[in-house]
Image (tube, rainbow, N blue to C red; front, side, top):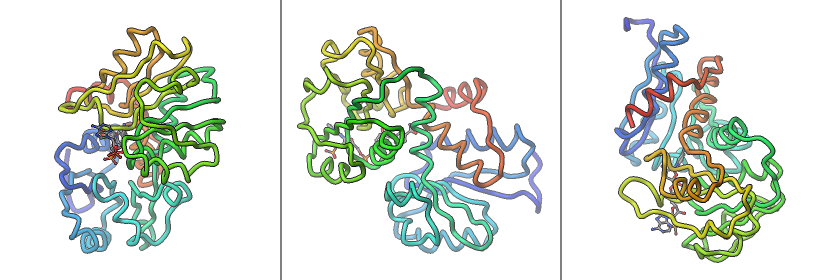
Length: 276
Ligand code: NAP
């Protein structure tokens, strides 16, 4: 592509950031839709964030995504945040429109859109959420907004589950127990822990207890087929992997910056899988 004085830029701020798949996704869309812009990985140490954000705005940056460890740290620097970012307590997208810093959280949209796109007739009675880290906050908000009657949360560190529970009137903390009886009740199981990621221990649940129509999803996407999803498939349960959440949160961010809701198509999925 031709880069000149008119080329705009966006990027992802993280520390570290070299693992991020966002440049592949957004640069693919810029090319596909003929947008004269590039998307860069921007390694920024946490102590430099408050200087970097205004500097990027002054340089004409279109907007940025934020990843670990910046999503919560950036909140005090933002002029206006959307309702989801406020509830989740984290911003993963900034738009530098009209001289202001607009903060959004597109993770909840990404999570739920991925589920809606891939399932029909999901019973919205009981969801079991495993984990209570940053990503779990967006998941619980999304499940609440989707209308789940019961959101059961279990986390190795119970205190973090108690804090997460405050995000939804439908949420309740249960003991960390991988053979939990909650598995019998669950219509939907969501792993939000980092268990199952490359280099981490697997998450193994007593899935034989589950209802036959229970849906299992894992937001971990490295690898795409996590041990939990493999175990669920062997048990004959429907599964949805975490790649879609990544792609749909990016879709919404791209829309904020460029006004186009880009396609999440097979070409993009293949590109990301090659990079992964
Ligand atoms: P985080 O804030 O660090 O939270 C990590 C969670 O995993 C906590 O609940 C933690 O429990 C739990 N955990 C870690 N090691 C454990 C172990 N050995 N046994 C039991 N629980 C353990 O991380 P995050 O930002 O929420 O991300 C979590 C995962 O989601 C990562 O794999 C990340 O890549 C993925 N993710 C995917 C997407 C997507 O778009 N698909 C988006 C965001 C995140 P404690 O509270 O007890 O420490």
